[in-house]
Image (cartoon, rainbow, N blue to C red; front, side):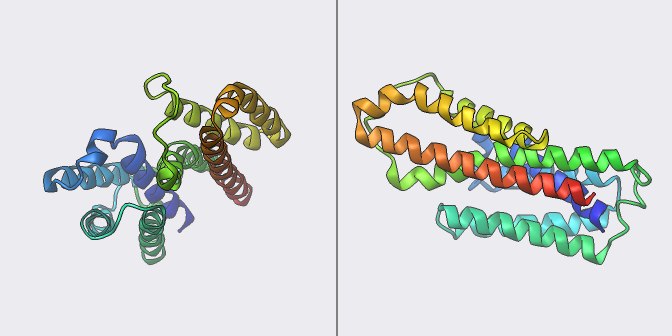
Length: 229
């Protein structure tokens, strides 16, 4: 059951975050784009599971229903985003519970334990980095201010991805104390912005703390999952 759950979860995070472009996410209200996204999730899940096409089809249909509700009926908020992801994980957990031997009967059945450990680490890294971006963005949406200084195109996004990836790495190599130096370094680099505008400074502080908090939760959850394996 655990292996089946991990494989389906890998397919989900690959389809939702790695293989879904920003443009695709922005145009998901178009039916063709939504169906393309769901098809990608299905193919990723099928490849990760190594078989069980009927099971994957059921999971994909549920994914389509959840995404349709979120896209066409729900407001774009942090709560909606988290509920959407929780619903996807619940469906995956239910599928793994009902068909626990799907992974073992597939192409990758009998894979060594290290493969599952590496898969969990990859899932944790994706959740911390790519999934953390929408979380921080939606959290900061009500506080958006127009007078932020211009920076590099997508510079803030890249900084967020790198800092969350470093946090995951530090936790997994059992060096969480080094995260303090990362916080100090970013605080020094952002000092000029904070001194010029209180609003901009508070905006950056809230975003930074939210990014770090998300990465820490994802990193420690990943570390705990690895100890269970």
